[in-house]
Amino acid sequence: MEIRYFDHAATTFVKEEVLKEMIPYFCMQYGNASSIYSIGRKSKKAIEVAREKVAKSINAKPKEIYFTACGSESDNLALKGFCYANKHKGKHIITSKIEHPAILESCKTLEKEGFEVTYLNINQDGFISLEELENTIREDTILVSIMFANNEIGTIQPIQQIGDICKKHGIIFHTDCVQAVGNVKVDVEKMNIDMLSMSAHKFYGPKGVGALYVRNGIEFDRIQDGGHQEKNKRAGTENVAGIVGLGKAIELADKNLENYNSKLTNLRDYYFKQVEEKIPNIKINGSKENRLPGNANISFEGINGEELLLKLDQYGICASSGSACSSGSPNPSHVLLALGLPKELAYGSLRVTLGEENNKDDVDFLVSKLQEIVKELREN
Ligand code: PLP
Picture 1: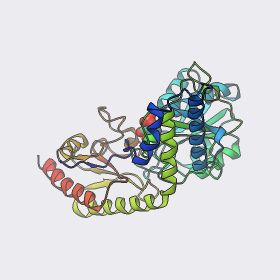
Picture 2: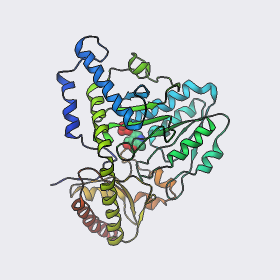
Picture 3: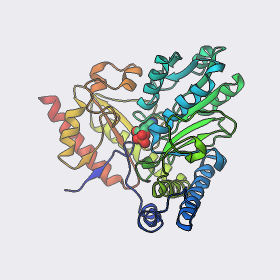
Picture 4: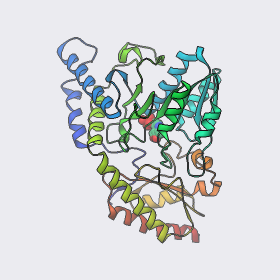
């Protein structure tokens, strides 16, 4: 059976060019980057080349990039590392209700440790209110963490305006950019971003490697004890092959960003139109405009999303009923509830995230199967 993959927000395949660059670092150039002999130095050099590529992509300086093991680790390091190092300046953090668990759970930990967190609401289109943000800022606010693009509904927050507000008030601005990097242009200077998390496996790089950007001069503590790698901010022998893969993947994404973005936008809008025309009683979740090019999240009235997924799987269709991290959880998505969706519609959502290998034929196949299955499930 042919597999049709519509879950690129969960993860992507590794591009051949990326894998090709990684392979030598497994069996031949396997030296520890901290070793002084030649194959160790070659590993170190490869890491620094990747660091330059990551920095170039987001308009940062190489010394502002720290490699980690994933997006979740970058989020943890940004929030906890920053708060621990700056608690003498204040203990109030602002975030939103629709963040990824890596942010929300880090906030919970910080709350247990005496920090206070304000969770901003989102409106029915999926955006925070800049006015609410500004009204929430206090004397003791030290950090704002708002995701660039949401992993479930794809909405892109007004990042530059958030950055401007934070700068005006002298507050550090972190953004979870895991879903945005590789899909839309990110510029930390233009957008006044002080810290940013990313993860290679969301843009055709390998799993198990991420990066954190921290603007030069911002203090943060390491959260894992051990060796002095990554300028003493992230202990652990570097995943050289993974870092090389991240560097190559971000370079390829940058080269092809415009084409990729417009291909996915067209395909996504085609999917929306087809579903709207062919299936009654549906609701598109999140703004149709300011959203990631490949993200389409739709609720089907009277349908259980998990059942829908299982039926789609019988035809080789891979999609998601929410974020990969929360599937399997009996609770409806916190993001859809924050949008104001009734529980029934939140349970009936299907997230389709398009990518490199999808075409119109795939979307036609998906829509025809959706038509059949939704009708069948509604009749039962
Ligand atoms: N943040 C967002 C917005 C995500 O979508 C994800 C993964 O889905 C993460 C963080 C975590 O990234 P990783 O899977 O690399 O830990």
